[in-house]
Image 1: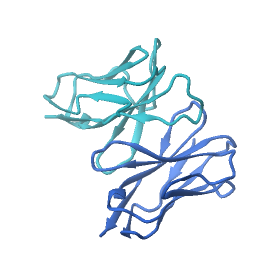
Image 2: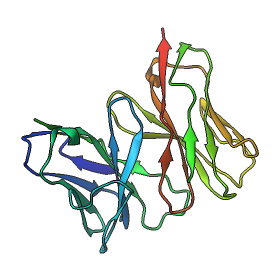
Image 3: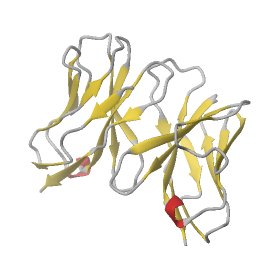
Length: 118
Length: 113
């Protein structure tokens, strides 16, 4: 069964509004969750690393005030796209690593969220 | 910075045949992990196989195997007895311990009946 639940799977919003995407670890505690963005026919680009109980670590070039990440519990991280614009339209995927997992623990991915900003 | 290169944007294979997807990476580290992920049209990322750099033996998972050449920094994926359900994007990925996963640009695999 699914290890990671990501919601919603699709969302359409108007320019200027905010959208929240949830990522839940269903089977284990996850101190670390990752948020990726994938443009059509391209690879996954890491946006930020979400750490439970502390601030997220953002990759270079990713606006932390635009992509708000909250990791309030060991099973839930949220990504909020604030004041969305059409160029934010993309596929967003979260991934989870077991808290007790070693360095070679694979990441478990959510099903992704297709965001369309009109 | 670590980079992962997949030189084949697209590959095709006949059903039941064997295909090899290429991946090279650049790192100055000696201890790391390599992965192949599959992304079918559903966009779900599925782990296919993984390899620890300290292990000389090539990883194998049923019809999937890798050819890991550490000195050459090469990590190719071989799919034997290809099935229609193998059609997908395949991403090679690298990471060190608890650090982030770095993906290649992917190879689109088509399986012809």
